[in-house]
Every structure is written in C-alpha cells, then in structure tokens.
Amino acid sequence: MRTSPTAEPTAAARRRRLGTAFAAAAALALAGFGTAVQADAATAAPAKASWAKTPCATPKHQGELACDSLRVTGGLTAFQQQAADGITPKATTPSGYGPSDLQSAYGLTSAAASKGAGETIAIVDAYNDPNAEADLAKYRSYYGLPACTKASGCFKQVSQTGSTTSLPTSDSGWSEEISLDLDMASAICPNCNILLVEAKSATMANLGTAVNEAVSLGAKYVSNSYGGSESSSDTSYDSSYFKHPGVAITVSAGDEGYGAEYPAASQYVTAVGGTALTKSSTTRGWSESVWNTSSTEGTGSGCSAYDPKPSWQTDTGCAKRTVADVSAVADPATGVSVYDSYGVTAGFYTFGGTSASSPIIAAVYALAGTPSSGSYPAKFPYAKAGTSALNDVTSGSNGSCGGSYLCTARSGYDGPTGVGTPEGVSAFTG
Image 1 (cartoon, one colour):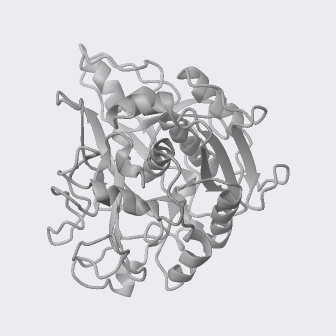
Image 2: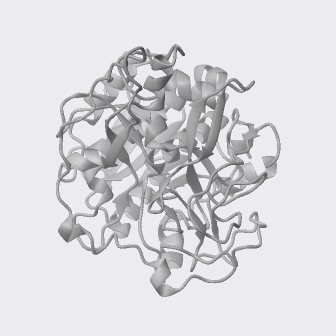
C-alpha cells in the first residue's frame, strides 16, 4: 500500500493483499536459527543475515489480520557480527540482542532495575501458545531476569473472555509471535507483571475484544503486534476497542514499507515504527536509522485514509492521522533474541519486525508509570520532541513519497520513526 504525501490515498493504494493471500500461504520451514552461528572473522567475511516472515504474517483465513514479525533463518546478525569484528557481545549463544543490550540502547538500565513493580503489561495476540509460560521462563532464566510465573501471580494467560482454562486453539505461528512479545516486555521491564490475552482468531473483532478484556483486567499498557488494510469501519473499531483513556495502547506500524495500516492508524493508540539498531562509537554507544529492507519490506508509515488526526499531531502532509508516533528496533538484521519451542526446535531465535518494537514501547510506558486519568498516552512523547528524552532518528527511508518526511527520516518528526526512540522514560509520562 502506498499513499500520497499531500492527498488522500486512492482505494487501490489503501489495500494490502493480506486478506487474499491466505489461500496461497504455505508453512515456512521449521528448521530454525536456534543457536548462534559461530563466526570466524580470520577465515571468511561473515554472511549477512537472512530471514523469512513468521507463519502468522500471512493470514490463514479471509478477514484475519497478520502479525508483524520476521525470523532470522541464516547468516549473521548485527549482534554476531559485533563478535566477529572484535566487539564483545553481551552473550554468546543467542544470536540477537538481549535485555542488557536493549536497555543500554534506550537509556533504560537504571529504570529497568528499579521500576515496574506492580505494573501489568498486557500482550494481545491471536490463538494459543501452550508453551508460553515455559518458554518465558527459559528466556528470563538465561538472561538473569526474575522469574515470572502463573503460580507467583506475575504471569497470567487468558482467553479473550478472561478464561484461564478455556483457551483458543493452539497455533505455532502465533506462538512465535507470542514468545517475541513476552520476551520484549520482559527485556525492558523485568519487574512488571505480564498478562497474555489470546483472541480466538485473528479477526479485528476478536483481537479488539481481547484488548477490551486486557483493560477490564486492569492492564494500563497493552501491546498489539498485528495489522492489516484500513477500511471504512476503522473509526467504529476505534470507539469499540481502542478508546481507553488512561491506558497506553501500542500498535506495530507494519512491516511492508511505506503505507498506513490499521490499528496503527487509530487515533487512540501509539503507532510504533521500526529502526535498524547498531553499536557505534558515539556517546550514546548506539546508532539508528529507518528500517528498510526493500520496497515491500520495512517499517510502515504514512497517511490514514479514514482516521481523524489527533490534536497533538501538527504535521501538515496528512489531512488525517499520520503513522508513526515513536519507534524502536525492528530490523531483523539487527534483531532481538527470543526463546521459542512450540512447533520449532526449542531454542533461541532472532526476530525482527515492528512486532518487536510495539512491546518494547509498551514496556517503556510501564517503566514510566501509570498514565494520568483521561489521557491518551500517544500524546506524551510529542511534548518531548527535540529534547534529550528521545533519540531523533534522522537517516533512512522506507519507500517512495516524493522525498517528503512521510517516508524519509529527518530532524524532528517523520513518518517512519515518529518523534524518535526512547532515551530513558521521561518522554512517556503524562
């Protein structure tokens, strides 16, 4: 989907092919990237990472939405190439960034150690992951994070109706997504409780019902790592599922490059774009650019065709809602470490996609503390735009939009990365 930087998109441009691709979808190879590829820099140049969409990134049924995740299947990630280049990584077995890397990159090391107790991050996904608790335990144990179990009350897994016993049908593709989401919430806010709400299918109605259930169960931070084509029904979905004042609802901006998708385009959510994250010699120690692999793969951005522009957005290139608001790492080549075992060889894998950035930002909101009553937390980062509370991403593009800020990074607000990435938590309070 592509949109015009100055005018409403055409109907053809608005439509992604998510809903029609399901019949042609085939199961991806389950052979994974479960352990780190060992690089020998002295004998050969390291091969760049390669990856594929996770199975849930292609809808199984007409009318379902897609998850926004990709899994590395070969080659070396940025994490591993750091080792090959003589930079000591934080760990040697997983092939993606772990909690200490992500906390360091976003200025969260101190907050992650001292904040988050008593806060609950909700993860909304479709279908059931029967290994969710066990896989989460593996990830947290490996990285030295405190245990988070059902028995302790830290972890809870429910259906869209709140049942802990009558869960949806298990699905290996969505289980990969669930593992990614749970691990990213843990990486950023290890002291937070986690609520996993599983919709019975990936339709907007069921996922939206799961969002409402998460809020009714007390979550003040709700991450959604899925999306699809915009439609004329979106404004009604807004009021039915996403209008929750005082709750930070984050949504992945999409993985298909320039073009807006829903529910990231909802006026009531924080739309989260994606970056490529690498270590650098800067004072920060890290650098970021817009995640863009090709004309059909990269972070989403652009103008909504239907959703009104929220009052805190002042850019002029879109008459309606502009995506995104903020961003975090999403490039699979600079991907994150995840432990998964359902339907794949049990072990650590590396994932990317804006499915990674959404739970990261939800967890940053959780570290920042409970949003003020009646607020829409998507507004909070805009008040700190251009300050040291955010890392302004100024390089890269995710497509063709006439060179405008809607697809091209620049100083200040731009579509692919919003007002930037977190540098601590102060941009996420209000």
